[in-house]
Image (cartoon, rainbow, N blue to C red; front, side, top):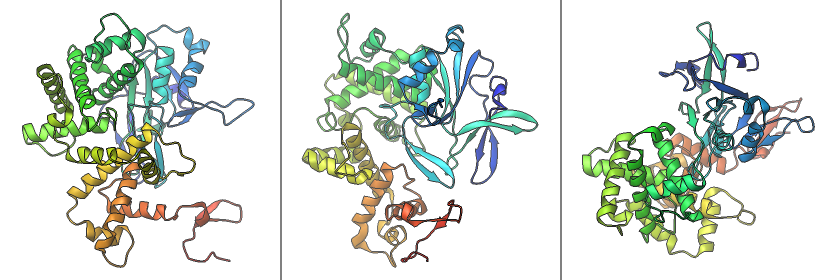
Length: 437
């Protein structure tokens, strides 16, 4: 990478490399910083951290605001005009802190709440006040057709990474203005509360992640902000939801999917930008006509409602214990808070959704739970596995992945099964009942 880093500002093509199949695919679009004045920062990284070796500690890492502060203090960046963006040539810099699973030699990421925690490149944008470009996957350079190109590695399912444009997030008075535009803050002069600012920032992030950061240049951005504010106001007014989960992309997607299905009879595929715009326009109209409207009257989300009501009826300690179980945390050591309970909530919703669309869960008990034959009495165990898999970002509609995850929970990939060669390097796994001599 060091040899090719000098091409970072001149290479414009992006290729996606699927290490499982060996296939290379050229992206339809050039990298988003092509032809723009940029400052290049190169480092190793993981979701939520950037490796910055020091003489005293070669493994030193920085995280969040410290990463941005470190770059902000660099004279080589500080002396550049404000129109110079930063290109983060560091793996996963645009990925928020995530659950990481190694599959087929590549990283699979699952970010339970990308509205609550952001990646390193967003923190750099916030601290430096500059536009920053970061990648969501392992990235680097390659040579294709005789020239240097940018590359990103797909995950184990072949899903592509992408370069993401990050702009500084609004704070203080600017964030208060967004809260007013969203209808969450009505005082024309005074500051919003920290709770309202936090809600508003989640909405700002949701619009950026759904439409891209450039949506804020759109003349209709104010309408989208008003619509998403209305949507969150209905969630906040809903007795079934307000105390259970904050506004999230999971909720946003399901509401858009439901409006598209009921209003346009379109049930296939993920909702696109038009579906989200339609949802937000309808939400703004509903709240304008009925300020006390609640979300579960606006859209029908039976699994969301059922899980919310079920969790609301449990003592907090029972919910925390269930969260520790589903998330695979040590109940005696884990600190269970709102993020963990929200993750439990959506894992349970996804498990119920899986059950409703799966024709014959009983038939899958044998294959997924590694039984000699299907067993109807083991369906609750299967559903528990599906919830735990959802919390880890496993593809629920792939029985092979579910079965592999079941083996992981049984300890198939624990350190106890590792075999080493005579040099101490990993050489395989031992899954027999007795260890070899």
